[in-house]
Length: 89
Image (cartoon, rainbow, N blue to C red; front, side, top):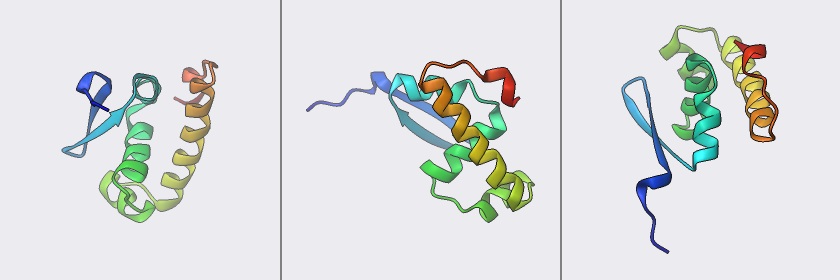
């Protein structure tokens, strides 16, 4: 199967390019506030620990955990068709 870059989306997080495949996920991630999006990308795409993320973003580990969990809930709602953008800003 040929893969084309048409559905590849690039996010720059701390000077690193993160590739997200698929329009729907990329659009949902784009709707999140930048810090929350960065936490998700650093955690799930760059495999960084909460401690590492906290050090890079100048946040305590617990804040990283909370924002990741609430961002995942928001992302799920967006992908399921709900619009909750303002609720988590």
